[in-house]
Length: 292
Image (cartoon, rainbow, N blue to C red; front, top):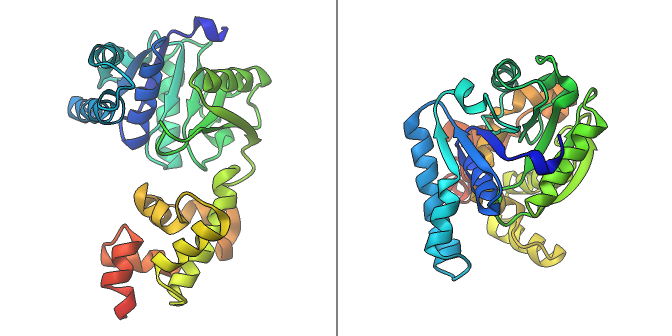
């Protein structure tokens, strides 16, 4: 199937990333989008959030008219039944929680209920595409398409090739990313964290260690990295902004499996944040760690 024949795309998962991906697809104007989650309430909440973002960032700034917004929103079809959501689509993008077992369960269903020619893409930021595809009868058509948060602003999409992903599938994912106005890069899934996150996480971990040692406050560390390396945001404030600490709190088992017990073990700073109920490092520093 050529990219021109892709007219209907299913997005599975209406959380932060799934909703933003559905919004991007709808704003392009050439795709019908089935947005699916476990309940009608979750999907309706996502669509309400999409409307609010479009009004705030496009209509109010004159980048889109109200009529154009309504036409885009009309392209998003709410679904709370996965078989119905994917039965007649041309492409699927999965954006559920970053748990391998959950993603594999979703891909088993996608394999069962979608036509055999349909490409199944995962928005995972670090899970193995090979392992995700292994539960399907079409691993050659399983690929990673990792969008970055916030989807509307971030230009990058990592297209991730599993061990059995075909070159044709990779090429289709690259082409779709470009149609969506993104800049794709291609990598193999043997790199845990793929490209951008693997490199960036090394800086985040050093920044975390400096906070843990009380070398400086998160504000000073972020300021040094912003000004010293011309970053738009420091790594700690960025993780607060996109709620990335929640992922750090939940991926220890995966990281130990991939990186070994030393590199994969949860940093004590993140463990203490989890134990004290904090999901953002700035208030955790101010209210707990600086006084500890």
